[in-house]
Image (tube, rainbow, N blue to C red; front, top):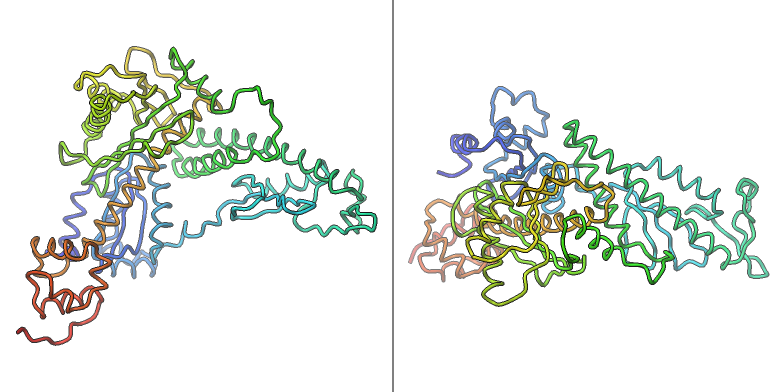
Length: 498
């Protein structure tokens, strides 16, 4: 029975869980037309197919419902995770009926164009690969504009609206109006002297960025404790983006070359916090993700000296069972990873991090026991309060939110999560493209496999002519014409079997 049958859709809804997640509505050609998030998938998705509620929907939503022929769901572990995944999928697929998240212009950046003789501080929403220095992104645009105005008075810098004038002696006049009397700096200056102002302003702005980062972290934790998950997830998105940007803005910084690098210090602090006898220079982190409530995949990322080493990344499809069981999945992939290192006589990482709590870390420990390998330092990182879980009798550990050690663990964990989501997207894209063939009547498993084997992908199948489809075993001119018309949304031309 095709998925677009209303009775079949309702049956599919009945099989959904009450877990949080994201749902993808599809039309009869398998195209994603809407992506939404849900606190409870079954409750949310069923609302689209309840006749009594139909007239309460906005006309746009009613039009969407009329086009729904099938749907997929992706279960996640929390509401904040569902919110972030929804945004990523909307950006990826750009569904017809979504309006939020499509535009990347969500947060402001401060740009300082270093190629200018007199660099100015301007606001932008896009980061380019140029010589400019960027600060942000910042969610509070009003506070940011106020800060820039204060910086102009405090440091004597130019903002984006200024038009300085070169004087005959080679110096610059910054303003030609009353503003020169408002700011406590000489209005006439050299490019060298002005660069010193810019340097001081950048150092201040970076410090201000870090101050705002701590404020945002505190707001995020407060929102999570109040169960305001959407607010917490939005703040977390800004925090991670700001952390990433700050890590890349080092152009003007003065530092002592004999001092340890930030990652070196973070690794040292992490080793001390975990009671390790040596600094954790190599770290690996595992994350388990679900696809459409049916498939389970896993990711493993590897950091060396505090930085991602993508050549050592691994991704896994679960082979030992079918279904959703985070603990069994974690046991399988951890066992597979370190059995292989053992068999190939390769070194173990200094630290293994499991995305999850007591159950997940117990499953990982079980895997090491099964392969008879002494585990390296092993911890879990539980998302709710960023709590470190140990496999032994030690109590859980919560590091300060501004701790470099915790920030390093967060980067490791978030990279594992990103890598898992990318794998999800790849498999889901393939599944969604191939699922279009489910709605074509009379196409069994054998013929479907023959099509995919012959053309290699749905994109090549769609680009094929009727004559090329006929070359596939099991397809005559009539069925080839019907399939070609189905894939292109047109009625088939009359054909005669020969």
